[in-house]
Image (tube, rainbow, N blue to C red):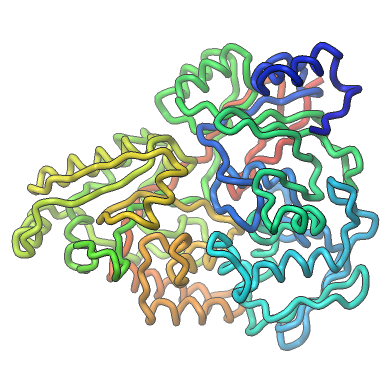
Length: 518
């Protein structure tokens, strides 16, 4: 634990030594200059950016780590971060980055070109572990990383990659962690993260909270708030009560059912477009034996579900129907993409022809940013639609961490998942289903015509030609139906009026440096 003693009374230090982190955090000052309490519904899966891929981990990583480049605060345009500048060779295959001098990791290790090389090398295919799922998206085209001098690093690609710089700004795989810490922990800092960001790690009481404190040696503008306490409160109603009672300052995972209650209590709702898609994933893994290996069955399931009716019922205006896997504002979206439409009569005919009377469905229990109604509520709605066409559904519900393992290892036909975009590029959405990584490619749908289109899109410069490639790719996916898009959620967060400014970045993550009202 390395929270500065000058910030704590002797009583607090004694409490921290003898009681739970929960009791310690509860005793902290509630002034936003000193502490901000943020409540989410799900614990992080881990805090090593190379080893996790979930939204709740990303929210913490966003404040602990930095990459060579970063997104601007208001959009996904690229700005310098740990790299001050860069050049790209004429053939688009070599990126040379000039690194920022005088940067330190939280453990005091100097940041330099060797640190960049160490982080990227550990995620190369020949040495990467199966849990390094984002490496297949962020670093898949990296051939080698070379140290030119202490503050110059060169990255050579196997082929041109239009989204490469945007990928390097993402919160998974791309951030640079301390090589010292990685070497000392057998290449896994999931529980002891060390980055260069404006906050550094203090403690993680699993299932309860993560505590971060301001990094006083940060190279940039210091964080305005001293400590961040990121609490895990699974139930939406309990998060709302905690906000109303002043126990926390920010809550996420809220839905239309609690908006008026929150507003009536004097708290502020931040509501903006969401770069996300909530969808059904059909098991296409050839080894699974699932009935959803049959494209006709997948289409029949999709035709059984009245998506517009369900979205209206569950989200009440705080999510829009997903007619495409891509959000409507993203380059590559087209209204001409058509997934199977609601047709219960035809669906029933297909089920009868195939002799299918029962399906196995798995889901997660709580709410997600892309599904504020919760996984179980959504799955039960789908279960009810399938019952209307004569299908009995065995529904199994798990907590988030268990569910992610079940998706990889259990036998089932239907699962539920979502995607929150990382960088504003269509490739970041559609490339998921072009990889053979089962963590990223949730249905494990491997279809070469689609993969070829995605590969072509990655090499094509931004513009109409590239957008047309992604339209064609999604038309192929809609026809094969490994998924069924459900909705695009609004980004909703409730905050105390003691804080001002929007705290949600367009990629859906939270920079915990809101301005403090005077």
